[in-house]
Amino acid sequence: MSCDMTVCAPRSNNPNHENPFDGEPVPIGDFRLAREAVAIAAIHEYAERFGRPPTGEAWAAAGMRPSEKTIRRWFGSFRAAILAAGLAERDGSNVLSESVSPG
Image 1 (tube, rainbow, N blue to C red):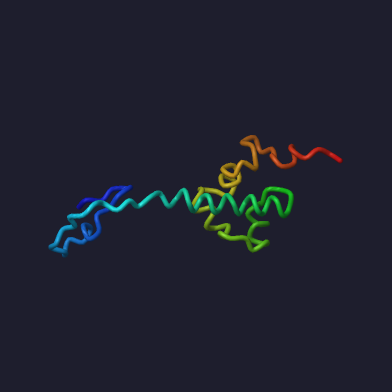
Image 2 (cartoon, rainbow, N blue to C red):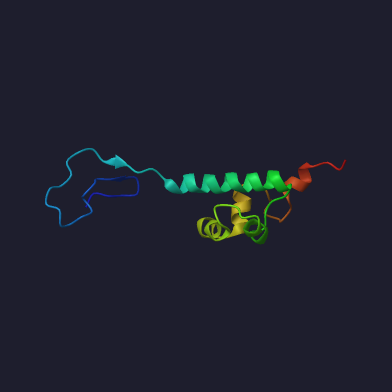
């Protein structure tokens, strides 16, 4: 079988196919980066709309997509997604509230 994480020769993963693929491998790409970018963009959209980073509960209540459950699956936790989006510090402080000066 000639597959790895970045390229895959079509039909090579089917042991019942007698004609092996003899063309160039097809690049697959890392789809995880694209889906995480979509989630991070949505988290930034929420923060712009509501003026604060979302909580999982607030995210679900706002009907945002991807779903809160999906974000947890992709990042390991909703908090990890907020950290990846750069909207919170590891110590728990809110990046948005620190960047807004009292008016």
